[in-house]
Length: 55
Image 1 (cartoon, one colour):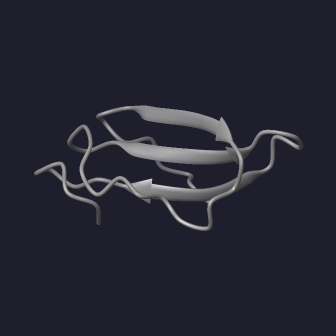
Image 2 (image 1 turned 30 degrees about the vertical axis):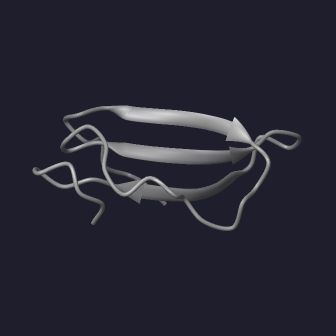
């Protein structure tokens, strides 16, 4: 997962797994990575396009 680095940066979020990422808009050309707060394991990624909308 995630070999590319988006020009808008990568936000790392640690917390309980919710099953999905609720954010539908964020910084254009960015990615949010969600990690399990106990294990540090990457659970999910969400990419945002040039308009800031989730891809």
